[in-house]
Image 1 (tube, rainbow, N blue to C red):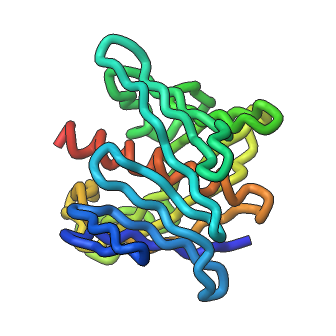
Image 2: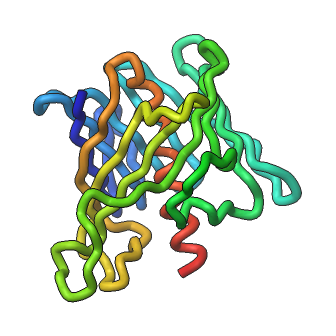
Length: 203
C-alpha cells in the first residue's frame, strides 16, 4: 500500500485548538488524497496524530549514555514503543549497509518487535550534472527477518549540488507499508528527523 507524505518548515503555525507553534517541522501523510495523520516537531517537542489518536515522544536523552525515547499513547498514557539511539550520533546511516546493524533501532511494544532503520539506494540515481537527480533519498525499516516492512522515498526541495540535505528543506515522497503497520510508519518519521539532525551537525 502506498501513502504520500510531505514535510514543510513553518516559521509560525496555529493549530486547530489555537496552539501557536514557532519553527515547526510538520509532516502530512495521505492515502488517496485523504489525510491520515500528521507528525509535529518543534525543537525537542515531538508528537503525531493518526486518525484522531494522539501519540507523543518522551525523551530521556543523557549526554553520557544512549538516548531513549518512548512513544506514549495520549489517550491512556500507555507506552506503545521506544527508540534506542547511540550516543554520539550514529554515522552508519550515511552508507548503504550490506548487512543489518542495530543502531539506531525502533522497538514496538506490541509483540516486542524490533526494527532497524537503514538508508537505501535512492530510486533516482545521483548525477552531478543533472539537477533533477539531486536530493533523492530512500530509507527502510527492517524487521529481524531482514524484510523491509516500511519504505520511505522522497525528494528534497532545493537540494545542494552534492546531494546533501539542508536542515529545514521541504520534501515530498511516498511511504510503502501495510495498513497494519501504520503506527510504525509514523514512528519511523522520527528517525528521518534524526538523520536530518545528524547531517546538520556534520555539515
